[in-house]
Image (cartoon, rainbow, N blue to C red; front, side):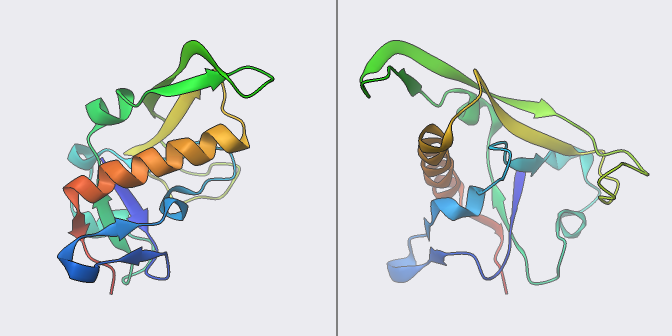
Length: 139
């Protein structure tokens, strides 16, 4: 999977090691978008701007993220959110007027995440992306 990252996003390559900010996975609906790599003709097709960077993620690794559900006292319940990557193609002439994208997918959770749990998911996604590094560095 490929995650598009605008060039102005927070990341650092100090010492040769990539360090991403979790903001690279921000999403207002708590469902970060990714593209299915094998459905894109080229990596350039994943970019919205020529300066965008592209990160590599592996769907199986995303699905293995263990994110505990918390009770109302902030203690783990022993149950984990189920994280999945769902193929959600963007059709031509969609109501949001987004560009058509048959490769579009979303990282989703069951049950839905709240803000603090979503922050933990973004952090886990950033660490996974760091492991694989840039497919295309931002410019």
